Image (cartoon, rainbow, N blue to C red; front, top):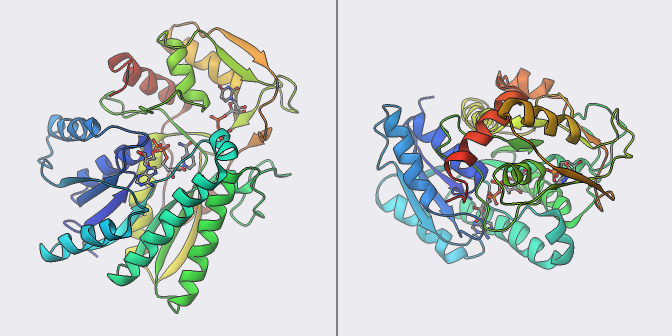
Length: 354
Ligand code: NAD
Ligand code: UDP
């Protein structure tokens, strides 16, 4: 099916992942409506997406429409769908990325997380139903797996989320399962379970620009590298891993962005289904290894101190990505050195973010 010129809604479109996903779909010729409350991002990124596309020879300017708004506002969502209908450019699919993502904050403000992530998602699903929009790619997370005995986690692993954030993602997946049944299996749904997306577009024109101090490892390393933070806290050097620090599956943001495109095309071109996919490289990297590689690739020094383990952390979390590769024909192409190089390029260009 030819999807070029289809209009898609990307919620959370100005965020770290959302901005790269918007860029990817625009490059593929889609019309994109990006909706974001800007609680953790800036709309300045939209200009950079346009400039980046122009610099690469794409005349996509004008295909990106930004709406500032909250997914908890159902009337606003209806307006967005209605506006597109009136323009004869109905929203055919949703890439749903809007959400709060701090594990720590989710413990301190659990209700906010349930309201924002779960109630907001229910609004999206309801309005999609009203407007007969049947295809959705949802940003789930490896956090839903929690503690696993398996060195490589498969999609059929039991959900054991260790914090309210992870529980909201697991719950949204459960809701989507029920919606699929309710629709007599007529919907097209893909839950992309991201492992640890890092890096930036290689141009350094877009990247991660949170509104508050980041809690994830890589953006924190970037802030230490550019002097915004004094040193990195490494949470635990006594984990049961080869060097005692936590092991994760880091994936380049451009490879991750591509998986959304491939997942949506797969949904559109195949029978209605619900598809759960791990989006990771299958390669584990420890905190200490990531710091060493970052220093060597970017010829800089990342001072660090060891601290106690972080509450709710797991020792190792690495994807078995064989199913995603098989179903989507997706291949993560960039390695950990690329992730460190591209992330630093972004931070060097925009040390204070947007
Ligand atoms: P991000 O904070 O950069 O992007 C999320 C965006 O959603 C932000 O721009 C924020 O302003 C917006 N948003 C939040 N609540 C909203 C609301 N109620 N209405 C409208 N917009 C709202 O984070 P990200 O890293 O780009 O993550 C995108 C999605 O992927 C999130 O749902 C996150 O939980 C999920 N995810 C991220 C990671 C990761 O490591 N980055 C891993 C797994 C899953
Ligand atoms: N981590 C760390 N210092 C930080 C942030 C994270 O040592 O400032 C560790 C954390 O304990 C984990 C790894 O880095 O082992 C990845 O953490 P992140 O929060 O980036 O991802 P997640 O834990 O959600 O997979």
